[in-house]
Length: 618
Image 1 (tube, rainbow, N blue to C red):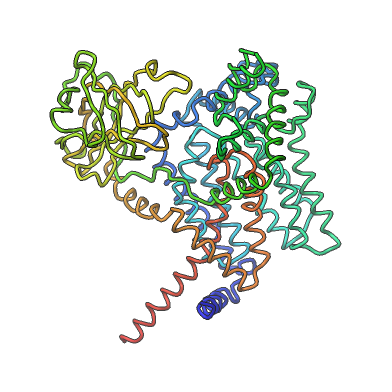
Image 2 (image 1 turned 90 degrees about the vertical axis):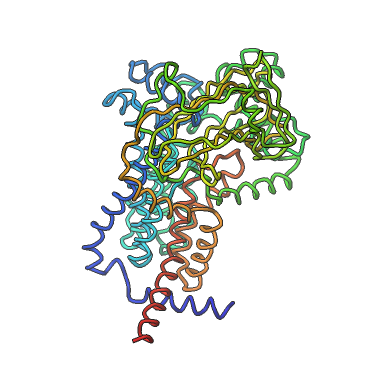
């Protein structure tokens, strides 16, 4: 193994020897064209992702998105006092709301306009990825890194959500780029700009609040001893100057020191509850925390919001409660942080680009349209659609509803329809009234052999509402048949859940909407979809680890330090709190830079092998 790795390192050195991107004039002429093409590719991938998901993006973090929009509308109305002092909007920094207000003023309250702004910024982030690698490694590695960032389904998906997570990454990438450029011409202004960009990121998300000191900490590895402190101080000062307006506003309005926003206590408690062995009695959700505080402090109004009455004091009480748990169980919580940090490097399972163009017809009112297929509750049982032998199904409500108590499998199918014949390349809509009483379920439309899901929708319980009082979901799913002439409708469990799913199902109907449009996009879609299947943890992590090992083996310690400082920061700081994958998406931009190192070497070796075979055949 050591001999193999030594040989690979030798090959990598041979490939990169004499290839200095900073002095190569041909590369300098090619670089703008390459960056432009990477930007166009990234924007195209994000547009296709938006096209696939545009009808569903509002369903992700609906309440959070509503808070951002409410805050933006306060600005649009000129209600500056409410914008500055509303505690209910203090869970997040104000940058995204300000951006939304600007977009709404120009384009109106348009989710599409917001999405295109975010897609454009994230496409620019793919270009910055290439520029960062170009400053450290050969042009070919930079191109691969830029292409990986452009094609990533995770980056594309997060950029179309109505949330600021992707916007917060671009300033961080630019900050790292400025630092790398400073290696060539060290100037205080470059470091101040890097710090200011980190501060700008904090206007969108507070996760990077301590990133500037972390970046300052690697200056001893990069610069001469007599200038280290100056550069580090300029970097931190730049961040402080940009963040200061928010901190000063909070001090004046609320008379408390709040650097950016509230929410640390809530995230700390939920982070503990996620791994609670069952002895801390800490709720895992926002609603659970609100209700527990209302009961604990005899304040019913506390159950109405996280940061309404006494929001600042409540957040600090949450912090104190969380720190008390950590103080008495430090070893356990260190293990929690370690497990959470490891989870940051797993790639999210996001939707990859569909092979078919999305539905182009509006669902509209199908009440007066004859369905092309339908099954009542009794017909579902009579046709043998109950797939699980452990599930119990019965007809209730005078035969109008099918009540099913599912089995205890995590993702097991409970109901599978008989094959449904459909026309090819046509838009269809599935309607199904469903009342979920327990568990979690997902409804899918698949090919007849169940090898591909054409459309799906998950249904969760409304938190805090008893099973018998849960609302009736009039589910409507649109899908494109594509080349498929037969499909199935599946009702399945959707883990995690501690109890079997229980639901009442009404008459299921399927309607034809009309011929599909944009069929020409099937060709680029199929190609991009095939590539995007590579972006899973099992593929990315081994290549990233190999990239780190190659850079160490070839003594590029500074490159490793620069590319790992942001992942190390998030692993150390964010692992103390409840975290969703989108909070730490910045880690994966740098992982792909390391993956590009391994892929470059692999492609070069394969190319040399092909040349060798051709030569021997000749």
